[in-house]
Length: 135
Image 1 (tube, rainbow, N blue to C red):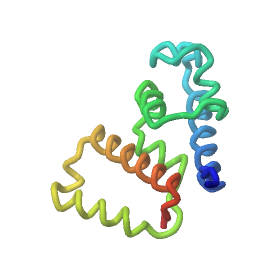
Image 2 (image 1 turned 180 degrees about the vertical axis):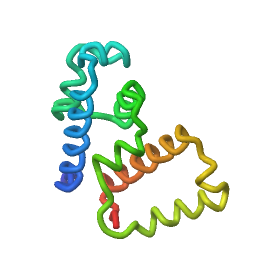
Image 3 (image 1 turned 90 degrees about the vertical axis):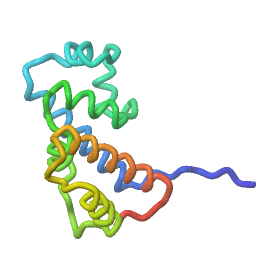
Image 4 (image 1 turned 120 degrees about the vertical axis):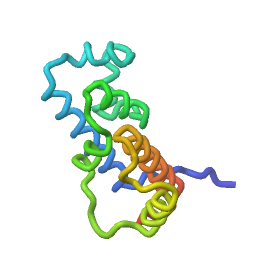
């Protein structure tokens, strides 16, 4: 039986690179050294540079740790790094409608909104990696 190869979509690679580039730009604008930031969030020496250059894979946890340390809302960052293009997907509309049915989105705290955005991003990345369509 042939071995299955997990192909990475070039669009996903491009989106990951955009997130890394925007994170690097954001870090350069703050006054703290990368080493100091690494120490504050518990990363080993030079790990931040490896993450930003794509030599190590940045997880959603890494992303949220860095953004929290920089006091930047994850939803705001992702909107800047990956602005929406095209109409919203039916899947996203369905998820938003389900949330709105449970509780109005305006009642969510900024922290809850960031957590929801991170969970949704992780779901979309996982679905894309599994070969699911993203509309």
